[in-house]
Every structure is written in structure tokens, then in C-alpha cells.
Amino acid sequence: MTKMKFAIQVNTSPYQSNIGQTAYNFINAALAQGHQVFRVFFYHDGVYHAFKSATPPDDEPNFTAQWSALVKRYPIDLVVCISAAQRRGLLCADEAERQGKQDNDLAEGFRIAGLGQLVEATLAADRFIVFG
Image (cartoon, rainbow, N blue to C red):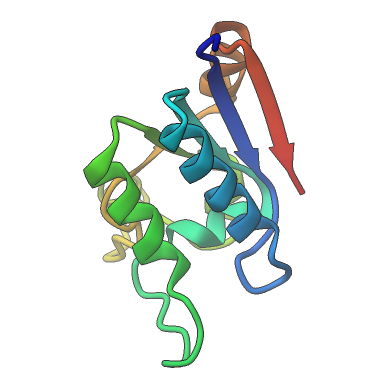
């Protein structure tokens, strides 16, 4: 079996649809089969997966915690688009300080970067899959 190198893009909010969960399940299945997922790029409303203060009801999955746990088990780069994040009020510590704000909303395991990281991912991957 040929091992594939995947890059993934997630465009939808975790509470808008189940597409983010589908992406997460796909990644787990690919990793279980020995494939590599080296980057997940969260774009548009997909950035909501990276809010550390997300507190869903007890009977719903905590998608942010799932992603954070995933990167503790596998070397996956979880990248949040800086422009999409800023439009939705998601700031990492550096950007909050630069803008004179107190917030650090980024969950553990995620990082903020630009579209260059998305372009790089599409060039480096054997397959680039967009969810949403």
C-alpha cells in the first residue's frame, strides 16, 4: 500500500454542520492506515474550531479539545488563517498584544499563520482535501 501525504482544509464552524467532525474522522482513519496528515488549515468559519474558550453542552462533543488532543498524539500542524481569525475575534497572544487587547483565544496545539501556509500545504501534499 502506498502511503499518502495529506493536507486538509476545514471551512465550516464546528456547530454549523458536522463537516469538521467528518474531517477529524477522516484524519484519524488516514493516520490509522499509516498515512501522513501534516497540516490542517482552518479557514473561513473553520477558525471556530480553535477557540480555547468553546464550552459546548455536556451532551455534545468538544471539537476544540479533540483537535488539541490529536496534535498531542501525532505531529500535525494545525494552522488557523490569521485574516479569518481576526474577522471573527480570534486572537493569539502576539496579535492581541500588537492590537492592544488582552485576549489570547487560541486553543492549545493551534497556531496562527497566513495563506502562504495553505499554498505550501497544497504544494507539499500528495492530496489536498477541502471539507466545507
